[in-house]
Image (cartoon, rainbow over all chains, first blue to last red; front, side, top):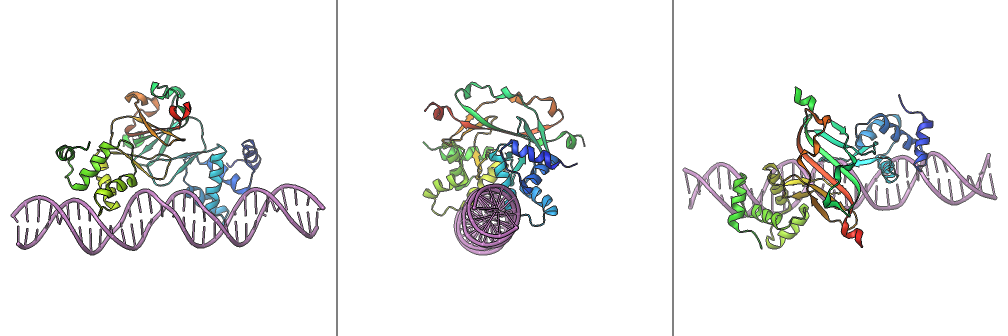
Length: 138
Length: 138
DNA sequence: TTCAATTTTGTAATGATTACAATTTTATTA
DNA sequence: TAATAAAATTGTAATCATTACAAAATTGAA
């Protein structure tokens, strides 16, 4: 079930983003598909309901979302970037067999390391690669 | 001081890599420049002593090194990939101001997380972004 | 030396992302 | 409501790291 226009508009406004059709659609897509989609994933899906949609608009929208801090970008060991609507601290596991991407929690004081005294940490990418439980059990 | 040919050859052979001039030069470069260089960094540097060098050869060589496990590839939040001759478990910090990349140690049982029971971890990318001590002290 | 296998080179293709100008839409003001 | 300005969206072309692949050069074995 899609998010209501009202909710989408409020969410955007709360983050200082002027709502527009595309921004609402992209935001709704990200809320509904917490699968860390690529630009192309989003584009292909939204293209169906907005036939005039341009891929540049997806890039523009995601760049704006990034700037306003409502998405994070994932630079995994693959060609395309992925976008994550969950900006809370968490890590990712990518299964090398089925390709599925898993979220898993990490502790905020994970990085209390003497070596980083005096360093300001603004962002963290914690990406694990391997075989997921599901693939492993087969 | 560069590594001796003998050492380079032995190191390659130990890892089942047939030595060649380019492979030795690239390996030596990686040993001498532990700065997580890009393909272009390596290419530009070696091009001076091997004028006929082709960039494809650097790609080929690094792909082989990757396959044989003597380098790791770093997919940071930037366009180019970086290569790391240190394959031991460690994390990276990238300063958003000066661009410098720092290594720092992490504990092997960092990821003893219930959420990953049954998962096989083959590889880990732990990348932090922020301001380094040096930039911060200024 | 000869020949096959391997390595290296060079050029072209790929494909995600970016640049940017033109067009369309939205909001504002008279 | 119409006119205008501002912002959003589109479409095309450029960029650029990486990959594909065939030709040329080198190496190593017989």
